[in-house]
Amino acid sequence: MNGAVQLPLDLAELTFAASGDSLVRRTVLPSGVRILSERVPGARSATIGYWVAVGSRDESAGTFGSTHFLEHLLFKGTTTRTALDIAISFDAVGGEHNAATAKEYTCYYAKVQDRDLPMAVEVLADMFTSSLLDAEEFENEREVILEELAMAEDDPGDVASERLFEAVFGDHPLARPIGGSPQTIADATRESVWNHYGANYRAQDLVITVAGAVDHDELVNGVVRSLEAAGWNLGAEAAPVARRDGSGVVIDRGSPLVVVQRPVEQANVLFGMAGLPASDPRRSTLAVLNSIFGGGMSSRLFQEVREKRGLAYSVYSFSPSYSDAGLFGIYAGCSPAKLEQVSELVLGEFSRLARDGVSVEELDRAVGQLSGASALALEDSDTRMSRLGRAELTLGEFADLDEALRRLALVTPDGVQQLAADLLAQPLSVAAVGTIDEATLTGLTAAV
Image 1 (cartoon, rainbow, N blue to C red):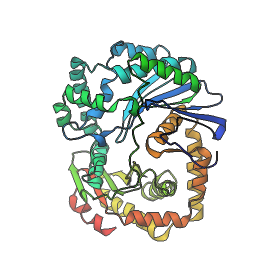
Image 2: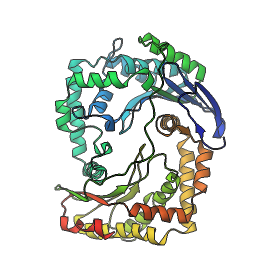
Image 3: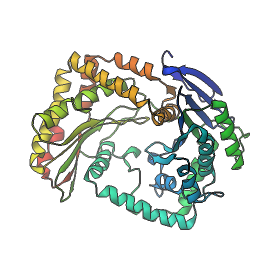
Image 4: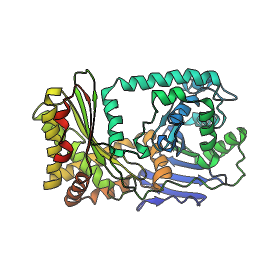
């Protein structure tokens, strides 16, 4: 495969070979349902995902947390299966099934042996189309979600992460927590979640991706049978929902500093700024920058903060991206007495990266790390299934391993340094949780 393959929404059929002799096929049904598969030679299992491009950023006032609430409820029974029936379907064959809600999508997925893929298609289709959202189960699951939120609130790292997103993204919908808040979940009504279900779980919203041991024609036939059995009229023509605008937006920082006082042993501190959207051509450069700066045990942060000085056990950088925006973040966990030293060292290293750039040796090592990690990840059908989903929902193009490696090989030291300088020019936000002396962090946002 030479270059990325485009995935036009108005193209009914598409077939192409990808690296490793895998075969990718894509079918868009007249109803707008999109089905993608990647057949991997020698695979004996398959991972399947049912996706909708609806996440926490798509909620409105009065429905915050509904997307995640709904994800829980789809496992609680349908018109033909109880919650136990759904669980037994996968447990009886040694399969795995779960779901994930993110800021821009929701995915229900399963991993099974090749012979059990038709069952997974049928059960997931039933969950997706025919969930009851039973009133009693709704109240039970409300309590489960409140416990989930309480568990996250007990983790200072999770709390700091949520506060960082709020501080960096401000009024942008990406600032909102995926699970909602205890108050929004307590206030949620079955009617509001049911309306959310009906508005966003339609044929034109559905994307199905499968990777591993899969025959595409059999997959499409199984999907059609399952959806029609649920009462969907797949003959009614509808265009797939449009992808989000990926042109990028200007992020207005919410706050320079957020401190949450907690009586815990460590200070959990996060530094962040606006990053790159998913479609930005500099994403490969950002991946290399992140690897060099804080992406592994040989990274600058790990070596300078942990190995040379023993100031922290965990220190790293990260760079999540979304359709129109992104975030570049740095995390460190240390004793409160070391917070000032760690903060100055972390931000000083980032300034040095932007000022002095990187060596060819660092660049080569980072490209090698990312290349190897990418290849190893694709040994897992879960990763391949997710890659298909992101390609269809967000990017509108499919890039195989060869194309990913080609893009990494084009990254230059000058490109890394320039991107570091561009990131450093963005307003900095700091979020910290622990026994914090706020004066230690005050002024950091202006000193970088």
